[in-house]
Image (cartoon, rainbow, N blue to C red; front, top):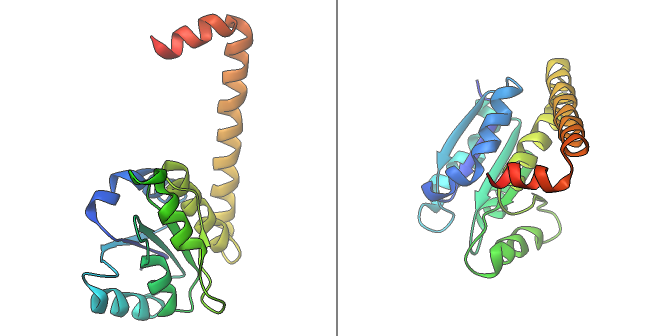
Length: 174
């Protein structure tokens, strides 16, 4: 049974949030994925969102670009936490998507992440932190993820100080 439901407005969004799935897998969080459009398949979207809790879903991640109504539509049909991930677009770098997600009316909240790769990653981490409230193993995996992230930064800092900034930059370009 999946703990997280991920709904994407388009299959073109899948590769843009790859890190989301990788983090959920790293944290041993089961998830299901569906492609369903708020505009082109509204009944499917409604049914999926309305039945999510009955399927054991505890958190929903909704990924959408452009008008980005999907997270709000999903939130309107469930009381589960919904995390909206705006997809970067050619129009204003995804600002249109961000504004669509954050400007929800009172009573239908959606947590909004950044556009792009960081948004997908943070959505997964936020979902894991929500699940951690009732699952010690999720909390432990999340703590391990953060520890490894800090170790990577420390390693990069050591390399920078050992090599000097010029060689470090050349290494990254090389």
